[in-house]
Length: 378
Image: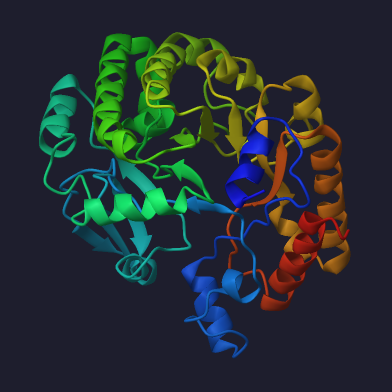
């Protein structure tokens, strides 16, 4: 089997042939810099390539994006007590320390900002934002070298799974809404102004399908990924009833459209505990979830696979185990891979990126042991 065929077997609830995909890990830039300063690994070296971790899939070079185009200008509004209040490129007003603000100018900050204000409060705000920054044919929407990107993706599709896209801007429903309105305002607006929520969701669906139509005509996408970020550590941020009323119809509309282009699998990216929403996800046409964070017992992969066999899972390996020593890593890997082999439809992956609290020896040990499980040697 090729890497693509192995992945499709997992999405189809089947067993790959002689080995499973071997998942590489996303690594924070700060982690790479730390390892470089410690002299253990140059930041110019790709750790996954060095350790020969190859998952057989490809997070695409984007032929098109769904972010604001043009983005907002990043502007500092005020400075107080060593912190900047600023409007970021997503139109959200945030507060960060000077140090962390300087970091985002290069890549990103490892500090969660304080969110102060959001770009949409009224229908007028939304109409202005949509007109100015969310047009499907705006100048920067598609890659300048679009034809070359398409050519590369078509070539990769011979042996690798094409998963597209993964940007937090969408497509999605609740996830993009929270970026536009903020969780508190959004939570109230579901009840105070449901017509505006429906208007935004309908417009977003039209925007997403228009952008993706061109890509899907040119690129054979196997798995289309949606962004939600709808779970907390204790459960979903909104109720199943609200998701069913507002989000499910929009998902059905988008998924029916994408199916016309041959897309067969629809992956939801949502952190936290979302077990209560699983029936709604399935009803909406979603068939897989990433990550599978064990934030509470009802998110355990073994339980979810038994309770919702039609929902495929990616994730389920606790990242904090990498800070607890080799024994904890071994226990976590054994638990996850036992479920994957016994229940199928589950691909063990580390839940989360490699942050600076994870040492190079721990990451190396985890990656090498995970490769042994993927190959069937453990």
